[in-house]
Image (cartoon, rainbow, N blue to C red; front, side):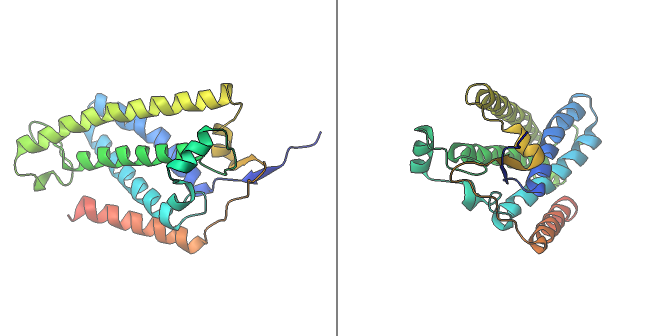
Length: 216
């Protein structure tokens, strides 16, 4: 039996980031719902580091990880909606959904950094910069509301995956596990980034997150 040809489409850092988010979001929700706020804040700090890394990797990473590789203008989105299928990695519409998801995740983490409960017992590392406790508590309410915005986006994301799998016969999950996608006309393998860029992105993300949490 002949195996269908494939091309490498996702690098390991992108895949690890994706599945880390899949695990972290429900873990953060569970920790908050069960009153494990120290764990919730620790996981939130990890999320901060991951988002910082993904932003840096979007500038320095492999060809399919970089924002310039998948964020396209309105014309490209329209061509895709009209049936164009020549893409590797995120399609033009999916690229904008990735940006939206990152924006909501970053907003959620940002609110959490400044939020506090009513008594000031459990507070984000930057809550001390708020003018008063009430303001920090207001941000905590915004933080909770933003979670449901995030949950809605995740639900839409899952529905889109099911739509592509059932209607378009396009499996989006397996490539995010294996890193490979069936080869097709116009599809070229990703261009990997050198190791030093990965190390730089990881180091900068960790350093920035460390400074934000402990020194700002």
